[in-house]
Length: 501
Image (cartoon, rainbow, N blue to C red; front, top):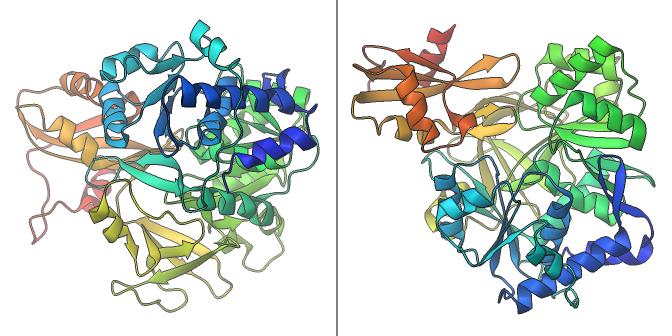
């Protein structure tokens, strides 16, 4: 079944109910949202020659149009390619080329970056333009039939090789993820609202399907992103507000509420994930905001659905193992199996550390046009996450480390290899290694250890800004005479982290 049927269903059941708000102002009802979506889908099919299975990219910051664009792509039977709007034009160009997109939907502010990417000059549709207004007024079409195993979305995630990989998320994957939301994360009641304070191209946007299914409201902040004062105002004005947030965002929101004494009764649920929430931060959050928190652990390869730590479990302070549970990532979500295994793939004993693996209807069928990476990640029906963890006797999973060395800064993944490759473009840089350093504001920030002569940090910053997104550049450069090596000639990054103190 095409997941776009969820919007079609809600347009019938909740036709006059508010669907999309910009700030606290209603923009479209469900009837209007579905009508615009069906028209935009028709435009893609008839005017842009988009056929079922073709890829259509969205390169935009959060905006009301994002939701209709996403559903229109699916409605037309095409495959959405939501691209992180913070990416550099060169990174965008790679994603567009690798996925083979036919059309890019973008915002006016980002249209120059699409042009700089050098592709699809005649197949760019800009939100709010005359062409876009014509598109959403096109004669509508019905939802295109798709099979459960058909790809619905390509989510690009970097890897240890530094090259982004397109995670194939099927209609079945996304429908199973949506079902898990209701069983493992939160129920959605009449009048509930999801505010998109985190990028809709990532996890926050994936939760739109559950809200659509129940006829919930979708709130796009006027700022387009995360501003604690704005969220507090929206909670008061809109009410029953749910958001998905990285731990660093939770930390900033809690600090704002504590400093201002703001009323938090308008917040219903805060789902956090995308990085570690340290115990002291979580205690503070619960003390300031109350029992409004749910944690999820997932990856693009099993979107938003590996484990969950529910509101009731976080609130159960009298449980004898509450402290251990609080710093865990919860238990396996309902439609997946989770194991911790050794290097041979055999389950390790309770309490021992190994690699976290998962299987179920949420797990991707593989990476787009990348059978090698697929074979390395999907083994004997299990998704190998690359994360190290341990299960307790009650099934609670605690993550110990990340075997892939990914740095999670402000909820965004930074892969050291891709930063290292850029720094090595400088002719005076002989060696480089990038690691994450704990940071109170961002969770982690990248630090580069550089072996070079006659180079300063400013030069390296300029180099990074010319090739990768700003948020990926190192916040600090440590110039050293040599990098530590183990007996295999590899740089042990644990030793570098120890040097950071």
